[in-house]
Image (cartoon, rainbow, N blue to C red):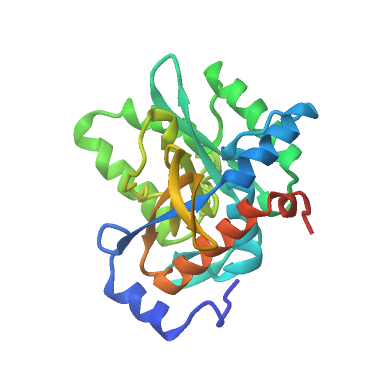
Length: 268
């Protein structure tokens, strides 16, 4: 589906000027006050729903994509920007046994409640940690088995089919939406505050969002210095799709949802 409102002159020009994210990557950082978010999580845990910050950030990013910056929910195909109909959030998780990273897509994330997101993630993490990966994620193991001289040519061929041409390879469960609309990863669980992520070339994602380690910091509120819980974010953005203004709107929307987490329970 072609949407002229997505194909602005800047985007058409950027798609010609830049190669995929190797050239077009830009980065940004942002600190969000999550004091109210953590209080909300505590209240939910008392009611039996074991939420984490990751669940709320996934919901906040999905809502922001859908409601506040819908022009980010797209991918580049043959020099044009193609709109995605729904928000898929790819969540990166660690496999404790191998210390390797894997992940999965939460499809239609903008339509899922916090409980829906919690239940889906818990089930998928349990499945993956039993070594039952699925979908496009499985293909990393297949690619690793290919002899080295052929490995990159095979990867480039698969990328050409799915990313450049925007076609589907059913046998490999690969298509332009295999990795969703945006990636969220919690690097704070590794003790890190900031990181500048790579954009997986075959993913066709315009935005990667990294959550850092929450720390208490002094901030100014109403001309007074108070201690708040601060969550650092860092993002890698595909400049063919996203500029600084869009990145700012995404950050502000995510902050607004985290400061009013009750909003995230409303999926309409």
